[in-house]
Length: 201
Image (cartoon, rainbow, N blue to C red):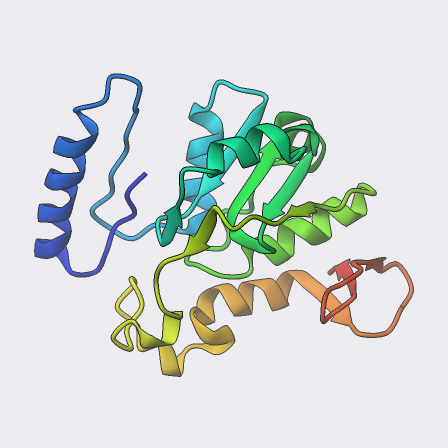
């Protein structure tokens, strides 16, 4: 799936190149968007269109080495209900059994950021937590968000955005959850997170 971008002319050319490249592979399905969509929406589109019990979602800012297939086959990640790779939701595996319990990603997150925190908290409410598998066969290829020209894909100045990328998503997360680093009544614990206790408002 190719997300949209606020630079309409450049995006149109990108989508044409994207379609032409993918058309060379008979086993590849594709979707492209002119306008930028929320990451939750894109992940849900992949989940809807996937035909397997196990779904591997990879963002586009990564480098994959030849050992990645062996990693998937031998690491045990296929047997995990849900798991990140190298501790990042830029590349993760999720199974339909988890989706059936927890649901899809919340499309109230209209941009990028916070959708993973929300999903981890919702998993915790069902007694689930994602695993993590490490590998040298996959790594991020792009610099950090703040060095990408200062403007995000929605046309907003990153330095002015709450949460480091999207004010809209940060405010939505804060409106949905009550959080604390100390336990409080009704909260679920998410071990290993900076903010450990979460409760739906």
